[in-house]
Amino acid sequence: MPGFELFGESEKSQVQDVLDSGVLMRYGFDGMRNNHWKALELEAALSKRMESKYAQLVSSGTAALTVALASAGVGAGDEVIMPTFTFVASFESILAIGAIPILVDVDETLTLSPKSVENAITDKTKVVMPVHMCGSMADLGALKTICDKHNLLLLEDACQAIGGSYDDKPLGSYGDIGCFSFDYVKTITCGEGGAIITNNEQYKINADHYSDHGHDHVGNNRGTETHPFLGYNFRISELHAAVGCAQIERLDDFLSIQKKNYTVLRNALSPLSNITFRKVPKGGVENFSFISIFLPTTELAKKAHTALGEAGVDSCFYWFDNNWHYYKKWEHLTHKRSLGKLPQEVVNQLPDYSQSDFSKSDAWIGRTISCLVKLSWTDEQVVERATKMKEVLEKFV
Ligand SMILES: *Cc1c(COP(=O)(O)O)cnc(C)c1O
Image 1: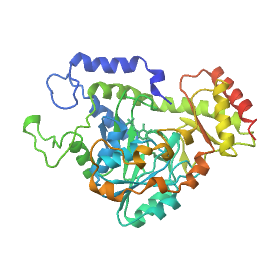
Image 2: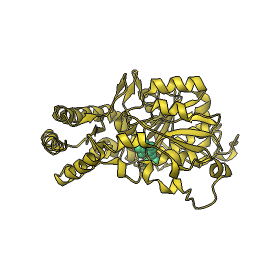
Image 3: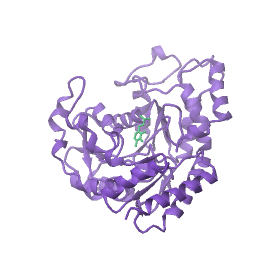
Image 4: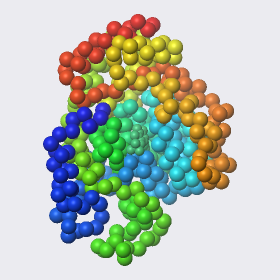
């Protein structure tokens, strides 16, 4: 997955442009910057590639989720439905604006179960936030039907699945708002960075202002701009955007490398009768950044994961025991361990997750092993890896 594996001349020359002008900030300094507007350029490239009217760059994927929620008017006490299997950024962004993370089961897609989503809706629900984990997507058609029926916002976290598609639409562009991360380990990277895409002009305007202290960005004097509403600083720097300008040009090459490597692994493992592959919803195309499989039982999956590591097959993940990606280890959330006082709405409304039953999620995630698909492998390395994986996995019946 990580785009840093293939850094080259284009990344260097983009960054050098910025250093040569000396303007590291995305706003202002028009005279000095020699016509370099890297953040603007990357926003244009992103909205074109993602077939969305608007893109807003920010400082991280977590910032993108936070700004997206804020831009859509989500606030204190509103409930946001999110999956049990994701990255902690999901509930961090929800809590950051005083809203309530409502955890919901995942199914064999490894993403939100539409049925469980429908059961979790209350009169406080404002948003459904599917997370397209490990390169593949939620059943967006089913989720959209639910959102339309209940008048909810569909916010796609496409941080791990950039370049995948659903119903021929780029992931992130199907719902009302989509979010990407360009952190160091993502398919394309800025070092740190993130983005929102949307077709909603008001959300774009809100995101533009909110991510820069509420600046209205009218005129060319930052000091005299007005601030129609409260904001924050989630800006990206020109240096980070410059790296992204180079990387987005390479996204489709990266995707084809991932697909090629994934296909070798998939073809090698397909004959095994003891494993099945994660379900991709009808109409979906993965970005092939991971290959995810189910073993017959949780016990066998644990053992198989250990055996893969011992056989030298690196970068395979057993999410069930992972501190950052699965609800079981989120005791800081369960026990509301914050530095200062939490908003009263959060204290009152956050469900008691120590009592919750996510056995439906456990039944899938307990059996799941996901292996990263790298960009820098040689053809020989992929074949060798595929052979090793098959030899190890076929023993766990
Ligand atoms: C990486 C990631 C994020 C957060 O991105 P950062 O840029 O690291 O803040 C959010 N959601 C998912 C699913 C991610 O993988």
